[in-house]
Length: 122
Image 1 (tube, rainbow, N blue to C red):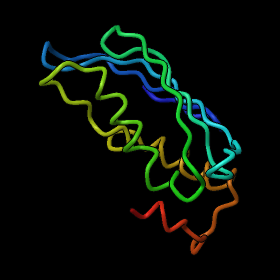
Image 2: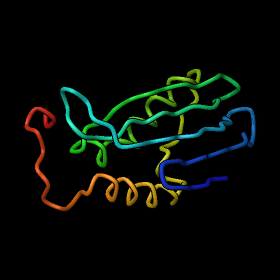
Image 3: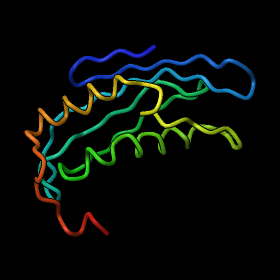
């Protein structure tokens, strides 16, 4: 199950077998100003993965948020699973992230060709 509202995504999954995994996650996000990085998005992922509580907060600068938010969120979720289980990419099964992507673009007033800080390319 997946639900979208501007500024919030809720995703839930029930394990299909013992090699699979379950999660119930909320991802809240809002425009924020970081003293060093400038304008961007503050994320808060909370809920549970395999029954373990999840509470992760992170900030991504405007020029990093769209190429990076799903991969970073997926890596953070993976850290809650024991090996050898793998957390699937959050973007792959949920078209809801297209809505989230567009909402973030709108909130940050992003356009193709916006500048990127050179230090973010390293």
